[in-house]
Image (cartoon, one colour):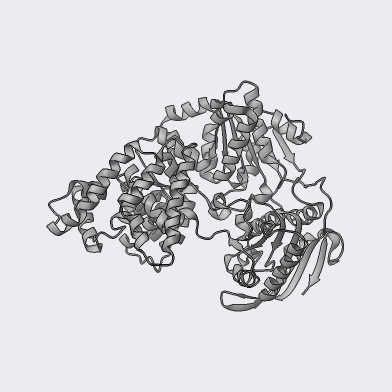
Length: 640
């Protein structure tokens, strides 16, 4: 079964006892190694109940589950393979003493806006997204609101002290609504393990073998979680690549993988350096860049693939000319037989996408910007999910506020305020307040909420017996949402109607994989951007380089390679940030399978200002020791 593995991959599969660190370079088959390790353990008689494999995206977890099942048969289905957040959610569902709703990014922003207003801030002046990032970074470092405030006070940082108060209020809102955000899932699981030793012992005893994928992307909270789980067996295998650690801005710490040998007293370290994705020309240019980082483990990718075409460096006068040149080359490549789906355009910041969009649209090419509105973020989808969340967790006031007048039933802001004040007085959730009624309600308000009360009681009955698809149908029909869209003459109404119908179809498909409505709603909340990329679609892909991790394309255009843009200007005075920018460039380059284009513009309009830029140092570094000989070796220079 392992005959097709290379010698280093075989070693990685065969070493099953004790800590093991695997440095897996880009395109080196790390997923294959993890899957074969799991299958080998099963073949040796290890129970699937005793194996845990953790990764970062639902898509990667599903791929692992499918491939393990394919190789190991039905027994493979019982191996616990999931994302960090899904793992934590499942643990909390079993062992947490409270029911909870998972708040996705949109829900978090609603709660943060409420917290800002409560603490006297204007959400239009203090950006909720910025506050969310600050709070999530704190949670990724296991810093609770009180500790955050104490730290800010100790440094006399008035801004952070103020945001600490918002953090505290935000957490109160979540607690009052029975909500946990993504950060809380890990935090509360760590707290559960620390505060209830018998629960930790149960999971330690269960998981004799633990595997962690993409270990270079772990943050402090995830590191602590794994460190708690590993003893006493300590059969902990982590797979990752320090050269691809690009998410420090959201808490990832490259030291987790660099210090693994010391932290876990690991005596077995392997390097997977054979690449199966790219040509040697691409790998050489990428290595020439990344070898300039000091904080890394020495490694060099190689391949049995052909040398391939030289990496092309195209320099343009302006960003508009850069976009025109890229689209012109795309036209040539498609004429040669490449498909639009083979081609990706990467850039450092979202603002760079506009000229590419303009010219692709003008040229008649379909394209998709990864980072656009996702299916589960569309308004009509979130409305139906809010109904289902309220039925799952009646204490979820934020979801309840979303549905109380959707479709419109005459319950305006004034009526809602009365209901909220009554709920606060009687210490009830909004759901319970509407169901029970109150002496505080006028006859007019009582008349308005009576149809909603009847609807919720009817849906609550079906929630106990329906599967997710049937419940979604009931919500759509009984609430009047379907009728509302049918009567809507807006041009988007038909599309929105198709979306809610597609939601029912999606739930029907999920029924074979997930056992309960609660699990399905949790799975949806945990979806990430890359999980929603559709397969086999004929469009040219545009995305920031950060979103490219884990993907591959036959043709890649790595654009905007200029000083102060890529590397970003913040990194020019910070060596650690510069190393991360270099890793980001390396990740972008190693997404390419056959053709890689590096492009830059001498003059670029950014945020309304025209600026001159020098070519990025990464272009110069990609030449290796060839210096300024831009036509030698693995890089071909073209000026347009």
